[in-house]
Amino acid sequence: MNKETHTPLTTQDTPLAGRIALVAGATRGAGRALAVELGRSGATVYVTGRTTRERASEVGRTSETIEETAELVTAAGGTGIAVPTDHLDEERVRALVERIDHEQGRLDILVNDLWGGDHLLIGSVFGKKSWETPLADGLRILELGVRSHVITAALALPLLIRSDAPLHVEVTDGTAVSNRRYRENIYYDLAKSAPIRIAYGLGEELASYGGTAVAVTPGFLRSEQMLTHFGVTEESWRDAIAQEPTFAIAESPLFLARGVAALAADPDRAERWNGKSTSSGELGRVYGVRDADGSCPDAWAFIEDTVYGGKEGAAEDYR
Image 1: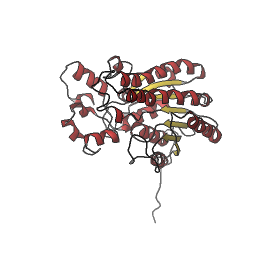
Image 2: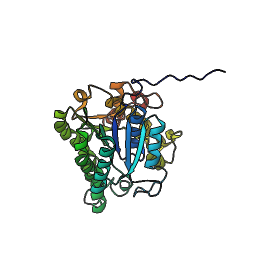
Image 3: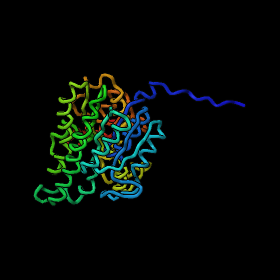
Image 4: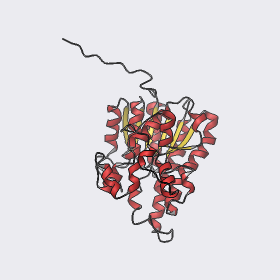
């Protein structure tokens, strides 16, 4: 009888083995992919969010849960631990940090991917002046996109700095360069620019601890929610280009996740990235990672050149 053999995993395959990560906002989209890829690299990953198998958040989606994300982390080779958490609730966040402290004694990687405000954008925010935007919606966007990040960072950083190489990742929409352009509405602009400044400021504070703080952004993300918006699937996503031509440059959540996992394993990450903002496209070039289809899309360069710059160019030219 032939005995099946398996090639053992090496530290090269699992460069984050033994590392403890928290991905705040890991229910779906980039957060879920980030958690899974950190797990694939060997990390123990605490995944948080508001949608569980028993309860949905205000986003209103029940097809993705934090329990499922944790299972995907474990299936990828890591250890996934789901902890239902509303990151606007200080006591819940304190309890989360205390649990990680009790179970692990430290935190090495904090990924702040909190958002959950897309349902407020279409019709309520985009296309409206600040004074035309319902104030309650605008303030909710700031709570979801800024206050939640600040609460989580403030309460988790004392645990993070116990690590020998603390890494704080702020996930947002846009880089310091791209966000020099107004992001259509003042509330959205503030919500997506603040994480860039958070990373810059925390980079200053973490430097003396040998730490790194960096803001990262995907390009045009093919999240579950975006695919639903266009009425397509991951397999048929190109059908949405007829509705939105710039969707031709869209990328899967895996692309950013692979880039961040490579960054987390980079021994020179502080020198390269501390206090800076970067994109999935730049991480792909620096670390040689590719999207699921083997491409390396640079959505921000494509949009800057063709949408704002008026240049002729096909999306394939930017992959």
